[in-house]
Length: 184
Image (tube, rainbow, N blue to C red):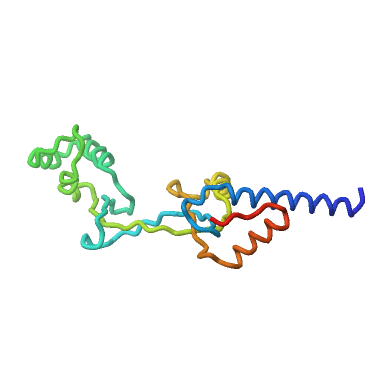
């Protein structure tokens, strides 16, 4: 095989890849977003410590800094009962808290000092990362890198604000490989 045939094979493979790329752009779901657009990974970021007047959302937070569910609270109540602390048993009885029934938020508030928890208000925001031109590429990236990503991520389709340079690039690729790039 000569150097020219290797070069020709490389160009043919590149053209085939570009042809498939433009076809993928044309046929993927644009989520009602005008072209050009790109996909990003959307990671949630939870910020704690807002006043109740600045957020409608709250969680129970342990003094060691982790979120606590009502099920965790119920388990902690059972553990304290197992320690046979008469003062705690009297507290439960005085407040009519049944450790065998689901713990209500009101009961959790009463138990907060015993369990070292407090009601903390938060806001969820999102950080957008990466730039992928196809949904297939972003999903592949997530699948291959999920060990480094939080479980709650999803994809976000970002509008490129009719970027004329990006629009023209996709159109030029389409012209070179013989596949019309469709504006949506």
